[in-house]
Length: 209
Ligand code: 5GP
Image (tube, rainbow, N blue to C red; front, side):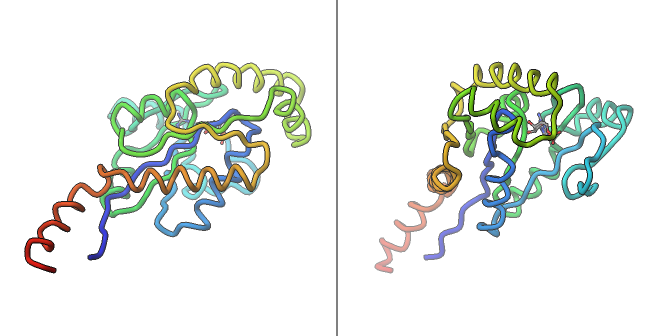
């Protein structure tokens, strides 16, 4: 019996510098069933970012218009810019049977959970404050005030970690990836993803198939 299941959402939250982007890319490369939720943002594109692939880059006026029209499944202001997840595009991907991976902040994850409960909300933790600070400095992309702001934000985000389905400490990238993979696969086995599985089996069972 072919096992059909519906798509699930996999939401990854982590303070910046925790390795979320690397882990997301690995999942996308390993599982072809994944689709990536491309957010809308008002921040400026960084070097190498492509409009429509990494983000949909829009003006504040455009973002506000879309938000007021109910276009977003969730939205938030992060580090002084607006970010939002398009609702219809998400529903379309799920209906097509894709699993959808979201790289969003904690405020957005909390809003999304209100409407999309089925799935897996994963919080990726740094091993310690000192290690997070070391990694932010090693990236060499942020000035001192930005590093301090990211550390302060990290503390606020960690405060919200309690309601997530899974916690993964990214001390060693390979171990963290294995754990993330396991959390994802476990989520796809939930009965709510395949509501007709047992019914279908029993139907065939009664008929001796
Ligand atoms: P960055 O500007 O570095 O790409 O992202 C900054 C933060 O915004 C990250 O924590 C990222 O997860 C979050 N973010 C990206 N897209 C969205 C979104 O659509 N909604 C929310 N709430 N946060 C987002």
